[in-house]
Length: 199
Image (tube, rainbow, N blue to C red):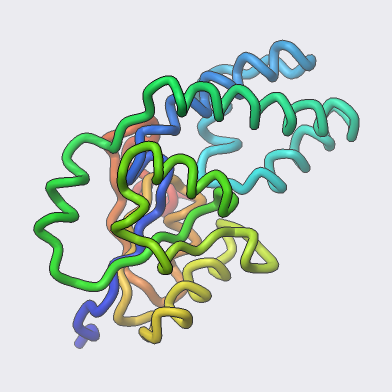
């Protein structure tokens, strides 16, 4: 028998805030600018759910360290501007949070600064303040399970009693560290659970 759910761990980008469309658009533009032509589908498969460090490593492997550093700087500038121009919560998530009675936290590949910015811009930060965890807190980001396990430990809940809400294949794989997972397919990454099973 499965343990009762005691904690809901939310991913942020694409699940709480509608930022993945922004990230994909920027990564496609920067790839073309720096010499790595990418389709939207490729940008989604390679980058969605990954930390900035992991994405920078991919750019460095493909283009070298200087273009990768340029990518990181330009991405941060463009993403900040786009978020400030009108980032919104994911449709229906505010209503879902209003109805949820279980404890919650956020575990995201984004940095703490990015999480403060996106959650703050959408008015969601107060709902999770003090319970926000970043890939910067652990040695390995998604798809390694470290971040979700860290969040569960900090919240004092065993992994078996956690459910993760994720929209990326990398995040779904990370949640398979003894946790249950709900794959959100309403954004740019439909059916993340089924894709994760095929790899």
